[in-house]
Structure formats: structure tokens, C-alpha cells
Length: 113
Length: 109
Image (cartoon, rainbow over all chains, first blue to last red):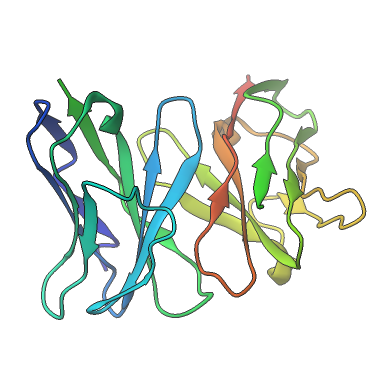
């Protein structure tokens, strides 16, 4: 079991471009979580998804950010029209069920120039 | 509102000395508390959760509801314990985790 996979590991974008971050959960896991870590801060919850459904997006910024977890394929966190303040590490985690242990991916480090 | 506070950003101890990483929380209901660890060049991984009441790699943590604390302790630190440690909370049936800012532990040989 390869664990939670995230790609790309590093992503550089210019202001105004779009960023797409991918997360493949562990085999058998249908619950996916996205967290963001700004420099010198802890991880902050963004969104919780199950297959084809957004369950909790209380931590998502209201604009420019969206997430999906389609029936087939990885979960995608999409940031439109990136700004410098979006520069951060974005972590994905997956779990087998509700209240089960979350297993984290290696993260994607986004740098906005 | 939920809050997790780790007052020490950096902590250094000598090998063989006891270590305690502090974690205080604020939550109105009954939270579940966790410690996650990130070793150098590795991903974040669960160290222990309070409901399992386990000792992992010699570490223990007791939930003190009166003091709203969940400090992580180990009687004799080892060099391989050097890592970043995050305290986290979930509660109210929610699945998302609230993290503290982390403590970087360095064990000096």
C-alpha cells in the first residue's frame, strides 16, 4: 500500500494563474481531507469530501478555492487566480471511515511568484 | 471555538532525559485529542490518540479535562525522537482536525 499520494510535490505559479493539486487516497479509503499550512503555522482544515460529495467545506476560502472527489480518479483542490498569500503547503489526508485515523500525504508546496 | 495551543516552538533535551511537550486546548464539548509526529523528510503520522490509551515508542499522553491539557511525555528521550510534534483535536462528531502550531523537539546526544 503506497499510502496517500499527492502531486505535484512542488508547484510554482505566477499571480493570476490556476493551481491544481491532486490527492490519491490510500487504497480502500473513501474519505479525503485537505489542510493548508502557512509558514510558521499549524495545519488548518479546509475541506472534507467523500466520493462525489463535499461533506464539510467550512475551512475553505469563499472565493477562488474549490475541491472535488469524483467517482473515479483523485481528489482535486483547485485554486483560481492565485495570489502570493496562497503560497503554502497543502496536505491531503484520507481515512477509511468516519472518525477513523487520518493518514497524511507528503504535501504539495505551492509557491506563487 | 476550538483552539489548540502548543506554547513551545522549540524544545531541546539531552538523550536519556525526560521530555514533556505541552498541549492545551479549548473546546466546549468532549474532544478527541491526538499527537502527530513528522520526522525529517517523512510525512505527518499519527503517534497516539487519547481514546486508545496506548504507549507508542515510549510516549504517553493523558487527557486532563480539568486543566484542558494533553501533554506528551517520555521518561527517557532518544535521538530518534527528534522531530516536529503536533497536537490536534477533533470534536462534535466532526472529522476535521484542529492542529496546534507544533513543537520541534531536538534530542542532543
